[in-house]
Image (cartoon, rainbow, N blue to C red; front, side, top):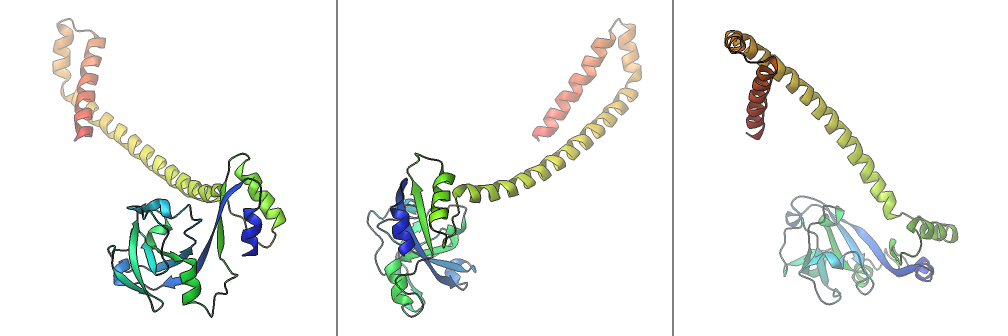
Length: 235
C-alpha cells in the first residue's frame, strides 16, 4: 500500500487504483464450468472495470455486492457465496474478449473481511495507473521503475506487443495458406479452361474462318472464364 501512495504522487499520474487478487474459485455451474478469478477493486478510484458494467451502476459497488464477468451466467439479483460469504450480483460486464469475462469483482474491504487472516490491510496485488498523456507512457513507467525498485512495471504497450506477436504469426500462417490455395485454384482453373479451349477448337476455327481476330477469341474465352469463376466464387 505504501507503493500506491508513492505512485499517486508521481507527476503525470491522473489516477492510481489498487486491486487485490484473493484467489480463484473452482468451476461452478454459474461459470459454465470455468474457474472464476475473484478480483477486489476500490470503487471510488477504479477506472478500468466500472466503465464495462451494463447497465451502469451509477454508484460505487457496495460491500456485499459483486459485479460478474460476461461469461458468468448467473443473472443480476442472484445471491452467490464467495469463500463462504454471501454476495448479490448487482451488475454484469459487457463482453470484453479478455480475462475479465471470467472474473468476479468485489470491493477491497470485502476481500479484507473474507480473508482477514491471510491478507493484511496494508497489502495490495496491483496498482492500475492512468497517465495524463503529457509524456510517453514508457517514460512514466521507467520513472516509476527506477524509483520503486520493489515493484514490477508493465505498460499497456507490453501487453499489446504480446498480442501483436501472436496475431502476427497467425496472420502469416493465414497468408501462406491463402497463397497456396490461390496458386492451386489458378492452376486448376487454367487446366480446366485449357481443356475447354481444346474441346472447342472446331468452333474457334469456324470463328477464325469468319474473320474473328486472335484478340477477339482470347477476350471471348477470358470473359467466359471470369464470369464463371466470379459466379462460382460468389456461390
